[in-house]
Length: 174
Image 1: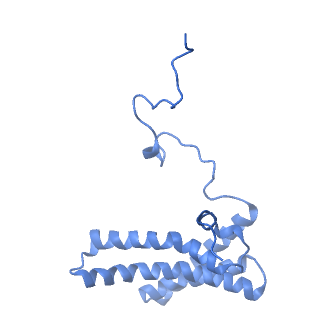
Image 2 (image 1 turned 180 degrees about the vertical axis):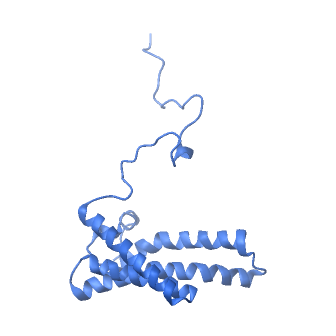
């Protein structure tokens, strides 16, 4: 049954335990992984590699985009697959999922030692992220305060006169 569009957009990766609703979790991760990897590939094509022709450009874009999307998909599928097989939602699933996702970079670069090292790094980072999730800590807090000169300075209003509210008046009517 089709869900309303608003309900589909509000789904978060952590709404359900690991091993359940893997398809929704995969779509949730791919919603950010695909545009991010296309942006990285586009930056590479326009600023660094400069392939000639539409076919070579498409192949270069695919050679960057597909492995990045594959790495994200590998983490989701491995973590949730292990959780459904083991019937446990613990740090080991996340470590192994991170290890498999990180080792995919070794396949991408065709270097086994690099893949092992990145697998260990990915596994450790994933296990730490799971521990942060279990403890209830946020990496990026939801109630972030804007500070002048911070990373969000471009979102501040630097106009000389700020726009008045639409129901603003100068004072009581005579």
